[in-house]
Image (cartoon, rainbow, N blue to C red; front, side, top):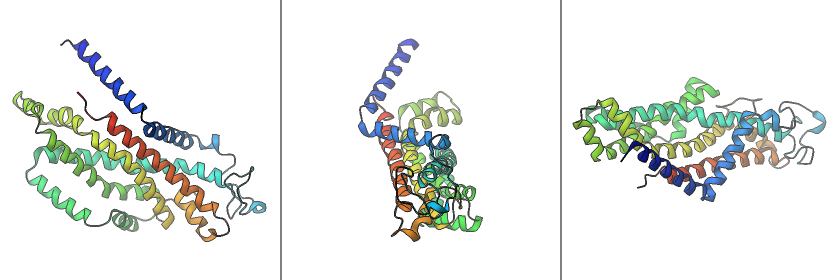
Length: 287
């Protein structure tokens, strides 16, 4: 088979996979949600009707209206504008809190899965030690040591979260090593680096990418939880967890203060989950 024919076949397979994914309503809805979320995160000033930190004591705790669709808070700030500006922080959480954990975890998991031996035994004991404790408890413990703030929160999540990516990658690499192409690479004298990163890892990465989508949704929820507890973003920065914490004392008189950012968390998390489900079908190997 010529190179042109192989290239055309690969393009046809990619096109068919994309068509299958686009025919799934969940994937389309998820893509729309995340696309809109990305727009709000990149240019919140274009969509927010007011300055998120503009204080107006004449409009304190006003209910939702045409002038303020999400109402105002205890300082008269527009809640819709603060929810929109929070997209920048929370979408940043979804990326920065997971990308370093995923990169390092995939690297370690690929090496451990390929070489096995003593490194695999040490890794196994490390995984057992970490997963014994609830993920949130470990993250809170690390943040408590480093101090509150977004940067320390990213460090804490990365320090704990890479283990899960490494464990998943290790399992997939071991499974791929049982295929003929891996043995053929060894027989042909390919270097370990080439076998791992050019042959094994590309075929083992699909479950990791799908897990990454789900993990970004969890990162937003975790970051909001830490913001609610005062360990993540700090007031007056607009962040969904901070906004919920600010409104908890007024839940009976100003219910919109906590409800609106909570809805934003649910919708954005749903978008990442739907995209993850769609990618599972899109990236699944087909003959």
